Image (cartoon, rainbow, N blue to C red; front, side, top):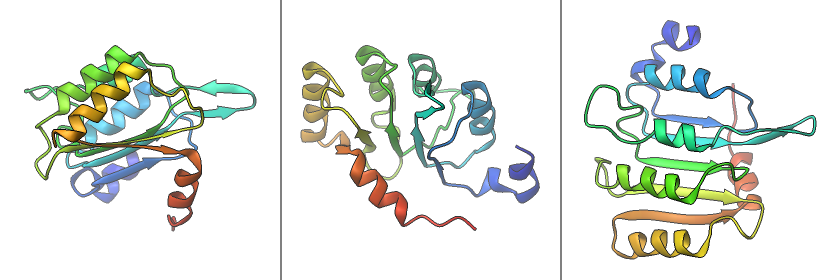
Amino acid sequence: MAFTSRSSLRDTLTKLLLYDMVITEDALVKCLVELKVLLELFIQDVVVSFSECCLITDSLLRRLFWRDDTSCLVPHLHRFSFCPLFQFGANTFAKFVDSRLGKASNGPFTIQAFYAEDNFFDDSTLAYMTALHAEGRLRWSLQDREILRQKLADIHLF
């Protein structure tokens, strides 16, 4: 938080990738509140010392619902990418998606899900996401974790 304040990232940062990082939900929310122009967010749940650090939960998804007031967290979110450990319900995920449909200013809301297991979503959730994609209301892709590794290999931090 101090770094974002000192460097003016709150007014300039448009993409945040939280790859292989442990952070609490409250700490993430505190950070996201400050990032006023954020457009893209990637979150990955991680396993550390044989314990799961699940950030992508029903609670976080509810906090990311779009709201038509100043309490909206990441109001300009255009792309949400994630790699979860499956600690959220399909109903909450669908409500999160519904809340964001039509709110992105530069095209349909985009979701890219990376998975490690074949049974990532139930059939009804997959059918719903596929239907929204076919209607052009949502850009939706489901990728395996190997594609995630390839994408992140191109990211260099200085």
